[in-house]
Length: 233
Image (cartoon, rainbow, N blue to C red):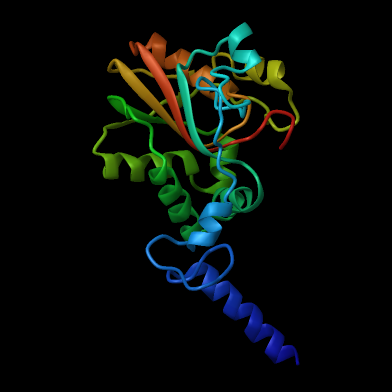
C-alpha cells in the first residue's frame, strides 16, 4: 500500500515536471504546458486599469488610485490575476526555483504581450538578503528570456537601499519603504519596459520607474505575469 502511494505521488510529480502533460490537471497536452480546457479557466485579467493593471469594471480605463495619485509608469500589462494555479506557479518558481514553473510563466507572458515592447527591458533588482536566500532573481530570469525572444536589450538597475519586506505594508507604506531604493547609472533610451513576476500595489514599479526617468527614459511601462487585486495577497 505504501509503495503504491509513493509511486502515485512520484507519477504526479513527474507529470508536473515533464513536458507533454498539463501542469494544472495532468492531462496530456500538446504545444503549451497546459491543455485547452485549463487555458480557458486560467484567471485572466480581462478588464484592467491601463496604468496599474488593477481589475476594474468593463469600460473603465483607470482605477481610482491612478486617477487621484498616478504612478511614475505609464501602463501595466498583466495578462493574468495572481490567484489559484497562477499563484502556485509563481510561488514554485520564486521560492523553489522550479524550472518548469519558470518556463510556464514565461510562456504565459508571451501569450499576451504588450503592443509596444519599448526600446529596452529592465529587471527588478533584489535586496541582498533576498538574493542570498533564494539564490536567483526571478524577475531577472524572466527578463533575460523575454529579451532573447523579443530581441530587446536588457538593462539592470542597482538596489541601493535594503528596505524591509513589503508583505505586511499597505499601499502608502510600500511607496515610502521603496523611495530611493533603486539606482540606474547608465543613460537610458526613451522607452523602458520593466519586467516582473507579480504587480501588487505598483510601489516597486513606481520606485523603479522614478529611477528610470531620472536616468533619461521618457516613458516607463510594466510587463508582468500577474496582478494581485488590491486587498488580496
